[in-house]
Amino acid sequence: MTRLNDVDATVGIADGRVAMNADIETPLRLETPDRRPLSSAEPHATLRLAGDDVRVAVELDGEALDALADALHQQRGDR
Image (cartoon, rainbow, N blue to C red):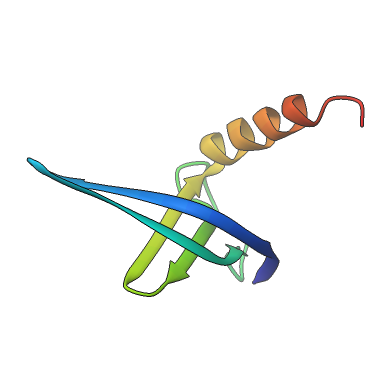
């Protein structure tokens, strides 16, 4: 597991007609499987945010991970 810098995050939770937001400051964690995924549909990485009464996990398969990496690379530009 890789622990990235602490981030300020606003988590939106919606369930039917009920919606709420939670503002948290927490480490962003990147978890990768111990073994290499066998197919692009299997989980390649999970991003986790956890704070008081809030837990968020974003599971990324191969295609989603590639798309996220491309978007981050484009956002970064030539820095």
